[in-house]
Structures are given as structure tokens and as C-alpha cells.
Image (tube, rainbow, N blue to C red; front, top):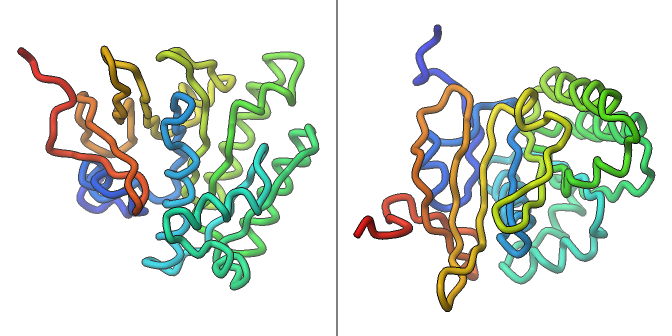
Length: 234
């Protein structure tokens, strides 16, 4: 088995997160980002693509199954990220896909990643996958084929999923059988306040902690506090 030290990684550039996953997501892996409403999933994804382009000169593709490109660029601007300029330079490609045909979605993703030589990919929100299928067996086969295609393209991918009060609807085995990593974002009520936190359920070829870490959203985006405890043991 190869040493973990030689694993090539894609830095997420989420402040504090890379410290928890040995420098980043193993290159070419697929990660599911699951979170409660308002937990910061979309901000996380925009931050990943923006800093990938700015700091690492990597082309990123954002496949939006819900929001329009203009809405995503407006969200980016709140944090001082000039996503519009990156889109004009074709360093970030934002594509809204509204047709509920999974084969067309898969082909569109493959075409955009290949044509633009992208190394970072976002699919948001993955929960929309449930509108594409009537039969679970068919869904599982197609999801598996998507995962294999992304592996072949060697693109480091984040697919978002929605959860509510700690419970989330699975993506037809994507988390269990296809994803190399699962990151959980929580935005939960504790007594009279809301608390944000992050947990890493799994990450292939990476030593991870089983503890939740505090998260805050600042003017610079999502920030994980890797050395702080979420709750006291007392």
C-alpha cells in the first residue's frame, strides 16, 4: 500500500479544513458535502472553485441544478470573490442544468470538464437527483456510472446533499459506494443559539478525526476552527 505522504491532493482552500485532511482532498476523488439548510454548502463550493482558480490556476466547473449563474455570482460578491471576472476568463464555468434527464446531465458534465480541462467540479444540489429516477435500481446504476466517469476524468468533485435536523436522504448509494469522502456541515440549535460545525465522516487515503469542529462564516467565507472543541466534556 502506498504511503499516505505521496498522495497528491487538491487543497480545498476552506480555511482550517485542509489542516484536518492532510492538506486537501486526494486528487480526482469525489466528496459528498451534506448539510442542513443554511449551513453554508453553496458558499463552501464557491470558495473551493474561486480559490482553486485564484491560488492554484485550476479551472472549475459548477453544475447548478437549482440556482442561476447570476445568483451564484451575487453570492460570491458578498465575500469579495469576483466570480464574474473568472467566468469571463473561463477559469470558472457555471452551468445551470434544468432538464431532468440523467444521461444528458452526465454527458453535459463530461463535455464541460473535458472541453475546459477542468480539475475541480461542483454538482449542487445532489438531492435533485431524486427527480431523475422512478426506479431505485436504475438510479443506483446511473449514479455508479457517473462516479466511474468522474474518476476517468480525474476531476476532484464535490456533490452537495441536503439534511434536516441531522437526518438526510441518501443519494442512491453515492455516499456509501461511490464517494471517496463525506463531509458533514451542521447548523443546529443549542439552547438559545445556533451552532455551526463540521465533521468528516470519511476521506479515502487520509487520517481523519472523529470530532466535530466549530465553523463560522465570516466576510472571507467558510472557516473551520481545527484546534477548537465544539463542546466541553464537562
